[in-house]
Length: 158
Ligand code: RDL
Ligand code: RDL
Ligand code: RDL
View (cartoon, protein in one colour):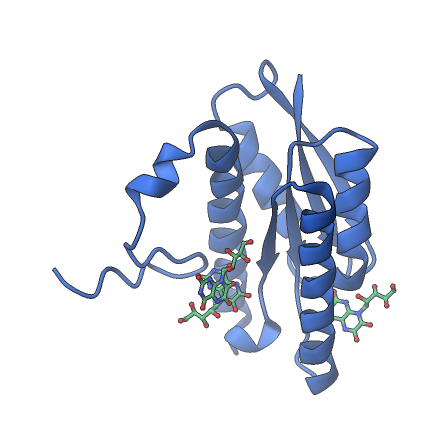
């Protein structure tokens, strides 16, 4: 059976991993065509290697990596570094890792930030499924201003 990985962090203030897993559980072929492997690490800088291990040691064909950069300026720097690590893991393994970061600064209101977490985690989990099994779903949406976390921006011209 194929494997799809989900890696999240203890640092994040919302359980985005659970949202991603639930979305994947509702995709066609869960339990028959693919199974889900979930891992949790302390913070987002630990995501890259955790994803690489899921790919190289556990055979995952794609991974969803979820993390929350905090509010401090240092967290923005760390987010860039964490992102570089995830990028490197993708290039070293020739495998997609969808980076789902929700910056704590994106919303002031905790309820609104939680809603961004749910929407972005679920949409990128679905994107992972599509990349693996239905890539034509992405091409169908090419140039359509598709967003995760918020409603779509839409195309420039009607
Ligand atoms: O490897 C242990 C930690 O360094 C690692 O877990 C970091 O990702 C933890 N961390 C920071 O040190 C930091 O300054 C995190 C953040 N900021 C952050 O904004 N979000 C995180 N981790 O998930
Ligand atoms: O791996 C999943 C996403 O992280 C990845 O698709 C990003 O490229 C999505 N993305 C951002 O996260 C972002 O903050 C994009 C932009 N900004 C952007 O300006 N343009 C994009 N993607 O094409
Ligand atoms: O134009 C408004 C937003 O799209 C913009 O602020 C993005 O940068 C927000 N964003 C992130 O900050 C991020 O870390 C997005 C993603 N990840 C993402 O994966 N998909 C998005 N926005 O649509």
